[in-house]
Length: 343
Ligand SMILES: O=C(O)CCC(=O)C(=O)O
Ligand SMILES: [Fe+2]
Image (cartoon, rainbow, N blue to C red):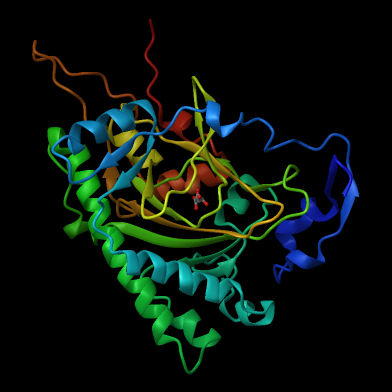
């Protein structure tokens, strides 16, 4: 393969159903974007904060990490190793199936759950070297299609994982928001919106020409990411540029999404991140998104100064449903709800 080659099919990859990664052709393309070359050697890079959730300093470390990075690594998170390994094993079992079998779990047109291209592809209108399986609660309907006699194992693994991730999300958010009234109760609004996204990034002959996931922010309050043992996740930091967030066995990555950025009145940074692909390795990741109920109005929590005056709100209140509608039309939806002050 020549340097500078690009996926001939990249422009219309998003339309390939089934997702047949072996069928993609390649052709030279001199002005292809070099997506992976902008990251310096990993030795020279700053490290994301690693936070021990059992430490007495956990709360202040979480707050500082969200203010300075919008992404951090957690250890001592309480998720047993067999739960982490279980989701990786069953995700690999799914993605290793012949494409005809994966197609049995295909996402319905306009739907949100099941197998398909990155949900982000529709928002960004970009081709990405990615296949995913999205779940909200039990994946039983799709699992039954794929494994008619043996669907329970996959379901149990995924349900247990989501239960654990929900508890962990609420623990982290509870600590982050402790100083400003805690995490709101979503009981009356139908509970938080949560999604588990299994991501698969097959090895790619032209890793510099296409993203696994293009740069984006998540819409969640927070996202918890488990990575298989292959690098690919990168965070954009204003001072350092793109930095790699390498996997560390047993630890989890947490990032701030747009909803927490809004609720914290821009105090916590919403992490701009992306995923690069490998020429050699198949990478998996599991992203658990925890957000407000779709119709819950999220508004900035503003500080009261010693004088009694309030800090100015930087965003107008917005529901997740409305925000997603705006973001689907323009990825920079935040600018649409920003309150600008004259003078
Ligand atoms: O693959 C990863 O590490 C990140 C996944 C991600 O950003 C997402 O699913 O939104
Ligand atoms: Fe993401």
